[in-house]
Length: 91
Image (cartoon, rainbow, N blue to C red; front, side, top):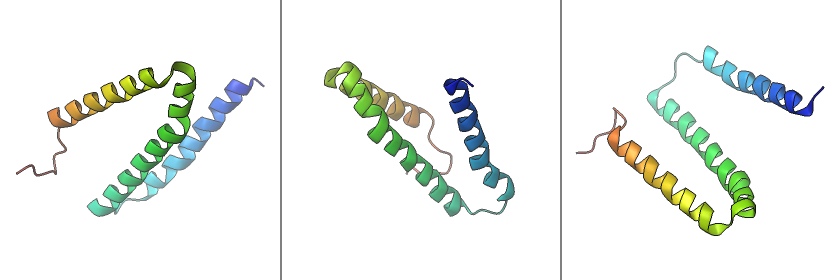
């Protein structure tokens, strides 16, 4: 079997397995949701820091990576300001 297809299937199966607990957890507090969201965000930051950034540095160099990070940060900051979370109080 093609290794790319096999990897894609394995990734899809792992995604489904990872999502299954969400189907069975019905009573979760707001604090519990915040903790799960923070954990997920930490995993994504770790993936980008330890996996994607070193690869990008090898392929394109520091200036391109720095500009990409800066533009992405500006974009996310702008998006967060345009659509704040409904439960936040900015007063």
